[in-house]
Length: 168
Image (cartoon, rainbow, N blue to C red; front, side, top):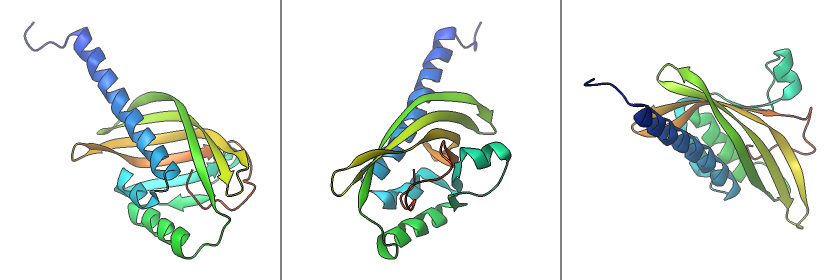
């Protein structure tokens, strides 16, 4: 059976892929949580799509998004505006991401989904659960690195209690 792939080789390949996908999702969370927002666009393909949408709009098929960036340059511009033009009360996020599931292949990439919670801590130390929901991702490999071709964050609530400045 020359050229056949063994079950253990397939299993090892699946574990490596899962670890790489989880690393990309962790890199995304830590980039935001560590306030390294200028690095965020680099986790997306140049034509990468990033949207934050309420569950209600998503379930009804409505296109309105709380954040909409249809390429890496728009993500970078959003960060520049956040740093230079937006006025908001200082706060930080702490992401909890879990239940990552690879749901299929698409072209040269993979579809994945995961759950998230974002805890927001204000400058005075008050912490609240700011957002919870699901990520729906299309992830591709570019020059040996995994990147988001699409990241859709569906938040469970119908609204957020303050200006959504920092990506979730």
